[in-house]
Image (tube, rainbow, N blue to C red):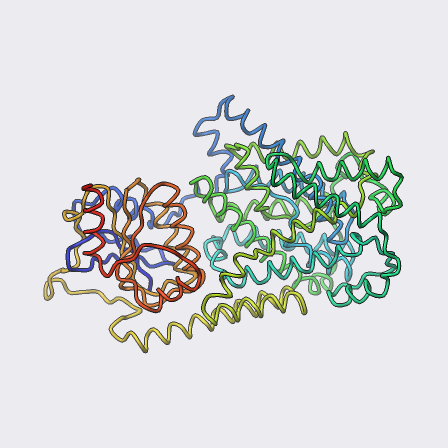
Length: 600
């Protein structure tokens, strides 16, 4: 059991049990609780109300929505649409379908994700996470098979949301997510090498090694003009990100590459030469016909889309929460993702989920509500109608350059480096998940990685029980008549502006999410936050990453964080992963440091 406690008694520890996965209400240890303790108590009361399934769009209008909000959302929505337009086409082509299907997805799925979702700022559409599985389905079952699999995955997401499973999906271990995301980045990059080099390939194998063998075999067809366009597009994107970060680098690079191709009459492949252009409107709705045999064959692929869609959408929502201080509704977000995927499949699209980069762009552009996401979808539809005739001139090497940037961002080099410098078990999970994603199959990688992480967790718990015999994983009730309560919370000894939280139990990937949620809801702007860590026997990479993010947020708000009583093993993990934080021997020393600083 992992505990987060609030309060301080000189020379004693103060505990308030907070089970991470059940709905037990926090017990109060004192009658005169602080507002922060009250917020912690209220935060853990299980919310069974139907109000948790109200879209954030409705919440926005209930709270009040005025002209200033609309102007902010209009600017943000148009900005994201400009970013999403070339990206949607590039991801669709990388997935083995026409560019128009990426645009259909951005319009239809993007609309429903914003209109029905549980996040104020989520932007939905095609993402790199789906490229591998979509390409595989299209190769084996054709586009009709992809439609069936996407609808099946949408129904799974819808059911998961209604069954309130959103809380648990976010507990997929951090090394697993990083491993398969980095593996997908390698696969997408490998799929773009042919277009970037301008190679004439009659058939492109589905596996990574097969692709590179085909590239080597056809290297004699290298097209210098295509390579130059790709390098030029890549240079434009990188320079604009460096010197003009607010400009839509992807769109500018695509436009410049298209103009260069037309004006210089370059012998390069374009959307028009390969796909014949894009339509200027959405297609009519279409419900596919299927058989039980096809459903059975597509079930593993549909489940992979379901898992990826759930993980990516909730990760994106968490990122949005961290940037805005808001809290998303996990289960409503899954419901919206389910509806969006069913609608996208019926309207000629591909699987969709929350797009982290586009969501971040939406927030940085000043978005205030889901209206921005709706405007983004409508704007893409308008640009389709206006720019469809010109889309035929877009060079495929330029879209390849866009995807190179996407791959670099997906690879999460810093996260990989941090995990590889952490505990051996986390390294093994990352490497195995990455290798299986690249070499075998994404579904296998996620399954094996998650099972490995579960066994690793059980092994760590066994070590804790063996080495920390005085610590019990299950807290029994205490007879306070026979043994008076010596652990009551008290704030009398705390200087003003100082908050104390006591952590008890292993700080692993599930507890890390619990810690983040509790502290986020604690509220207030103290000058000092003291984390009493003497009851934490171990920390894994997810716990260290969560702690690092908390420290960054605290520093940005000019809040000083002190760790008290950190044990040697957790301290070693934090040092390996580069988490720098002020540490003292015990809680009394931390309070003394804060009192001395405040008194100056």
